[in-house]
Length: 207
Ligand SMILES: N[C@@H](CCC(=O)N[C@@H](CS)C(=O)NCC(=O)O)C(=O)O
Image (cartoon, rainbow, N blue to C red; front, side):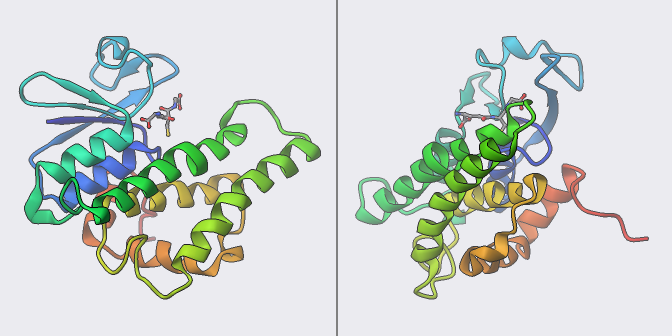
């Protein structure tokens, strides 16, 4: 399998899940603006929409859309326990959070990544959009659970971890949401996460 990624982008969630599953895979960096991968593949041939992630299977099939890829990784690596069984209430809850992170939280960051300079009003509106989603997720985590659906890490947690980390890039203080800040610190300690961050060049090298 090959995962097409951009460092720190939402593709990092799939990268973490593949590590958690101890899957056999390689990664290939994509320059989405240029439409090329690091080995010179034309990315339009891989992903019709030109964004990451994409997962190319050994069969040649290519999967797109982060939440679908995350569920595929979970469902094809049952031993890793990255999602409850399909058709259960517990799975529907994981899917609910995957959808919330994708269609609410992730999207709320779009103004910051539009490439346009935000004036004060636009920035305030964008921050309010992000805050609304984090307020909800902080409340979810406020009962002391370790992860979004309880004490077991799932693919939804991988996705939330990645999007919550974008606050560093857009200079929003995550400590406004102490439960999410603690969640991020907890997830960051996972060996699969450290390995993915290192492979994407996101860990600061020791001096
Ligand atoms: N709906 C897509 C959204 C993917 C997406 O937003 N990818 C971003 C990175 S997080 C991207 O590649 N954007 C193009 C770019 O950065 O040039 C999914 O869930 O896979």
